[in-house]
Image (cartoon, rainbow, N blue to C red; front, side, top):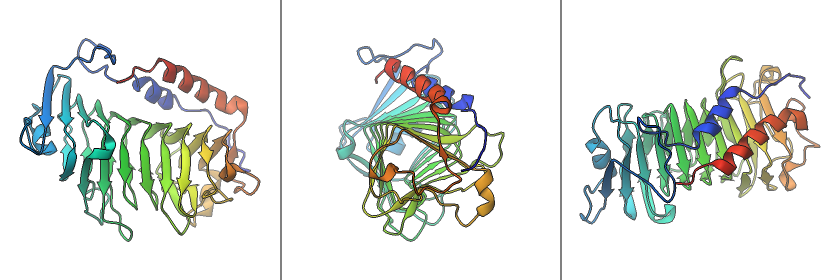
Length: 323
C-alpha cells in the first residue's frame, strides 16, 4: 500500500457547507421548505401554457448579471434541446416535478466540451427533479451534464449517458440523491465535489472506470468524495482511474455490489501515478467492497483519517436545508 500522508482538504468542507445552498440573494437569506421565496418565477411548458416552451428560452429571459433568486419551473415533458446556463446568469434554480417525467435530452458526441446536453457556467446554480441525458450511446465521448460553475447543487436528478456522462469540470459542487449512469469515465473532471446518497450505476461490460478525476498538482484542493452511495451495474467496473497524475477519489460508507472488480482501481497504464494518486475507501460494504485483492497503491483509510470528513459531512447533512 502506498504510504502517502494525507489531510482531507478544506475545500470539501466548503462544499458541504455550501450544500445548505441559497445563500443566494444579497441578504443571504436561507430558504426553507415551508417558505420558498423567489424574486422571479418562470414556467416552461411545451403545451404553450407556460411563459416559455423551451428551457433555453426561459434561461435567455433571465437578465444578464442577474442578482435575483430565479426559479425556472419545468412542466413534465421531454425537452429535446441543448441547454446552456451562461456565466452571467447566476442564482437560478432549474426544477422539474419528478425526474422520471421531466427530461432534457440530446445526442451529440465526440467532444467533451461541445457535446453536453446541459452546460452550466453560472455560479450559485441549482437543479432538482430532472433527467439530463445524452442518448448517443457507446463509441464516443458524449456528455450529458457539464458543470463549470463556481458553486452548484443537484438534488434528485438523473444523469444518463455512456462515456463521460458527468463532466464535473471545475468548482465546488454537491450532488444529493442523484442517479448517475454510464460505462466509461462517467464521472470526470477536476471539481471539488461531494456525492451523497447517490446511486452510481455502471453499464460497462468491459470493466470500465466510474471516475476519471483530473487533479493535476498536489496543491489543488480538488477531488470526488462519495458518501453513503450505492455502486451497482450490469457486469464489471473499477472505482476510478487517473485522468490527472494526482487524481483524488474517496468512497465512504458506501455499498459496492459485486460489479466492482476485486482490484478496485485502474492506473490507466500509468504506473508512475501509483505514488501520487489518492484513492481511498472507508467502511464500505457489500460484495464489491472486499479489499483483500485491491491494488496496493489504494488506501484503506483509518478511523482517524476519515473521522474529520465523516463528522463534518454528517453534521452538515443533518442541518441541511431541504428545498
